[in-house]
Image: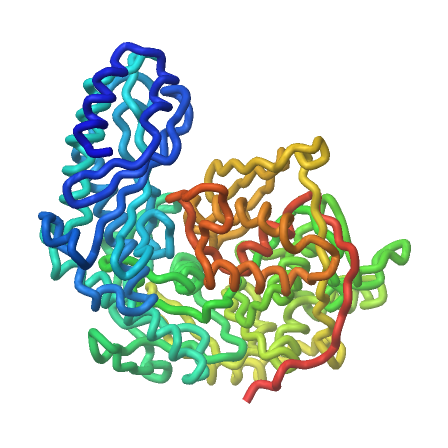
Length: 587
C-alpha cells in the first residue's frame, strides 16, 4: 500500500473512536523509504504506537530516490557502524523535536526516538539490518481529541511530517558529512585506544586536554566554565598513534594497585567517575572522548539494606556471632561492610579484572582497621578483614587491579604500586614520597589478610518473580536508570553507577525473561549464563529478547546484568561451588 492510500485512510477515520486506528497497522511505500506500522496504541494516553522506516542503501530502489545512501566506509567495522547509528539516532531526535507540533490529547503529535546520553551505545533505535538497508525505529502518538480520532492531523503527521524527518535526519545528502565523519572516527579511535590498554599493561588512560568535571550531579554534560583541561604528570605520560586522528598523549594508569589521594574538592572523585565511565565511548565535545578504561572495570561501593543471596564473602568476613557461615551468605538487609564485600565478590564472579573504589561511598570498617583498634578489639572478636589487607592478594592471586580514592588513611601506602595526588584538578605522581612516608612513620599494624585472597564462588541461580507465581509472564517497567520493576518485584539499582541509559535497563529487563526461558534449569552457573546471553546477543541481535522489534533497547555489559540479578529479592541459589585456583600471576 502506498502513502496516498494511508493518507486517505486516515482522513476516513476522522471523528471515529480511537480504537479504529488499529486498522492502519501494516506496511506502506513512500518515496525513498518503506514505513512499517507494527503496533497501534489503543488509547491516546497509552504507550505510543511503534513504527519503523526502512531505507535502501544501495541498489535499484535508490536510483529513483532523493535519499542518498551512506558511504560504506562509515559502517565498514562494528565500531564505525555503532557510531553511525548513534549519530543518526541523535539527528532523528533533534529533527523530530523541531518538527513536532501538538495535535490533540495525551501523546498526540509525538514523534520520538529512544533517548540518548553523553555515551555512545549500541542501541536498537537505528540499525543497518543488511548492507543494503538502514532501519529507524521510533514511536508516534496518533492524534486525538479526547478519545476521538483527528484524522487530518494524523494524515499530516505520518504523510508530511514523517517524510520531512526522514529526509533531514536519515538522508546522507542532508547531513553535515564533516561532522558525521568526525563522530565516527572519534568513536573508532576510542575503541582502538581501549583495545591497546592490555598490551601496554594499563587499566585506564586519560588524555591530555580532557575535561572531566560535569555540569552537576544530574547533568552529565561537561562543565563549560572554570574547567581545567587534564594534564598528565610526565612520569605517567604515554602516547598512542590513533588510526584516524593521529598522535595522542595522556596519563596511563598501570595494572596493579593505584591510589588517588589529595585534599577535598581537588578532583579525586571526579577523576574516578571519569574512569568508571571510560568503559563507554563518549560523543565528540563531551570532554571525555579519550578517557578509556578496561572494559571489565566495576565501580564498587557500600549499599546498606540490599539483599544478598548465597555469596561467598569469607575472604572479607568470617566467624560471625552464633557461628553463621559466610561461604554462602544470604541476608535481606545487608550492612555497609557486608554489602561492599558482596559487591566485590559478585563483580569478581561476573568477570571483573579492575575494581574502582571511592572512600566517600565505602564502609569505613570495611576499608581500614588501624593499629589502635587492633589493640583494643582482638582479631578473634572482629569478623571483618579490611580491604587494605586483601587488596594486594587480590592482585597477586587473580590479577585484579584496583584504583582507589583514599584521602583519609595512609595505611594503603604500604600496599600501593602507584600513588597519584590531585591538586586543583591536576595529577602528580607521588609514589616515591608515599613510600618514604611509610618508612618514616611506621604504623606497626598487623596484617590480618592471611596468605591468600580466598575463593571466588560460582553460583547456580534461580529466580521466580511474583507474577510468575500467579502463572502470569513477568512484565517489565523501567522508571529511570536506578529502578527496574520485573514481574511485580522492584529492584533498587541506585548503587549501580555504570548503568547510564534507561535503554540499557529495559534491555536487561527483557534479558531476565530470556534467561528464565533458556538458562534457569539448574545446569548453568551465573557466570556461564552471562557469557551465553552476551554471546546470543552478539551473534544475533537484541531482537531475540522481545516478541516484536523495539527501538528502545541498548547493549549492556555482563557486569550490569549480574548486578540486576544479584539485587533481585526473589533470587535463590541452588548450589555454590568455590575454587582456589589462581589466575596467571601478574607479570
